[in-house]
Amino acid sequence: MRARTENAEAGFTLVELLVVIVILGILSAIVVFSVSGINDKGQGVACKADKATIQTAEEAYFANNNKYATVEDLYKAGLLSTVSEWHEVTDLTKSVATPIAGRACATTP
View 1 (cartoon, rainbow, N blue to C red):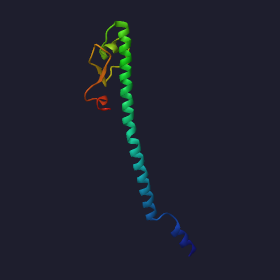
View 2: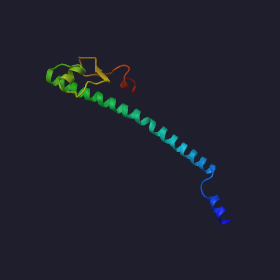
View 3: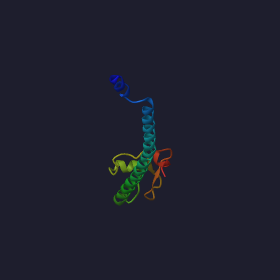
View 4: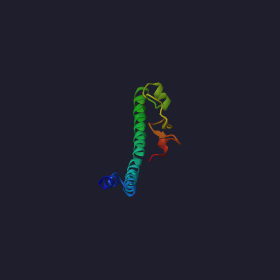
């Protein structure tokens, strides 16, 4: 009798396992919703940093050449490590980097 009772009590019941699965599902849903905005915030910060880098390079180029340049010219002058895929300089009379339409920074507030 004793062996039969110990054997019956070993392990978890189906209800206990289902309760644990439901709790884990709720916790994972909370984590997913709390982490989902992190990528958007990172993209916004990257866009601001890219714009600030271009504006600093524009100011350095203007100090040396007394005129403003395109992003490609800034890259050729060695003031940018890469050509920006997110911003362009459309007004060559002042240092203004504008987001390129259809790119990540154009949709970031």
